[in-house]
Image (tube, rainbow, N blue to C red; front, side, top):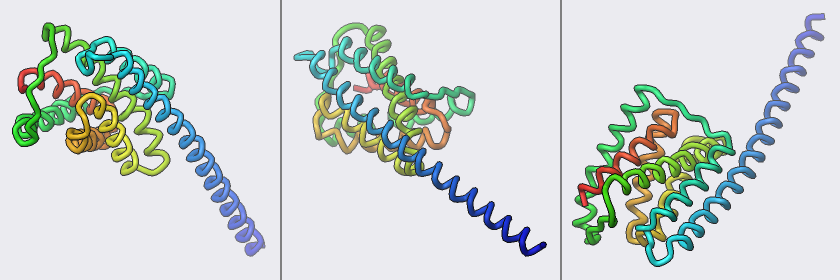
Length: 215
């Protein structure tokens, strides 16, 4: 009787394990399909931004807001989760400080010409904050979660960083790609550390706001 019970238990455990693995594979497959769909929309949003901006390029507030609106809409539809707490805010502010440090060095070493958008700081600040938060909601929010479920935090950090660098190529050219990849990796690390897209959102927006004065 004991041998039968033991054998039955092993059979049940093995069956449960196989069922769990099957669900895991199905979840990964579904997550992969969603991630691919999100990336397709992401590329389309980049193209749309370029088209809307026209000759204004990166100075087009309208193009930036359209781009940000698309990304935030996709992130929301994909079930983005928002968690805000004191720890998250501290990590975000610290992340912004780290991001600001190398800006002057990059300007000098890479010989990137200073550039300050036309218009008032207040108007520019609203636009860059909206776009920065939308980018983080998509990249380090919805997309990060999907990639993490598929391949763990490394895939999520690297994948979102590559996308971050890619979206800036039409704005700043390939010469800034390596720098943007490093920034994207740092923002991904903040996401992993905090467990929320809000921390890299604060860091991204904070660094962009400071950049006006650092340029």
